[in-house]
Image (cartoon, rainbow, N blue to C red):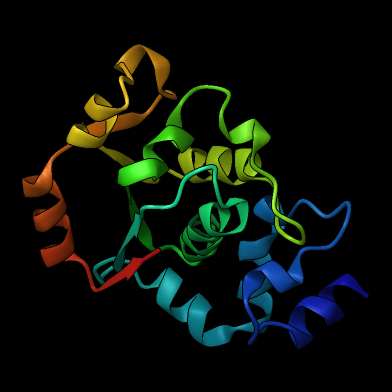
Length: 168
């Protein structure tokens, strides 16, 4: 039943494949190996350079759905062996404060805390806009482990080297 459901919804957004009680982050890559042979071929060909996606998010805790969606996309792409770089700018930088993500829950989506933890566990690169955290009085002691502070030069370099860039 579960595999059938995942197979039939593979062409929709991955958030549509979440089922209660199913730990997608442990099994999603296996399902793609089983049902998407072209993805498995690309994942197994280590001579190919990994693709990189840059996601720029400017939406903070004032809109839980828009704050969560970048991390849904990020973790879905990571499960397909894509390097993902996330830049949080403007009010989105507050999402990287310790304990903040626990309060962000959008109907129909995986809670932000779970997605953020998965993103970091899957070695996603998380950058916080340095002027944005300074303006909000956020210190590095207050942000989650693994987050880095960066300015426009780093963002420009990452964007220029990425295959795709998505903004929220």
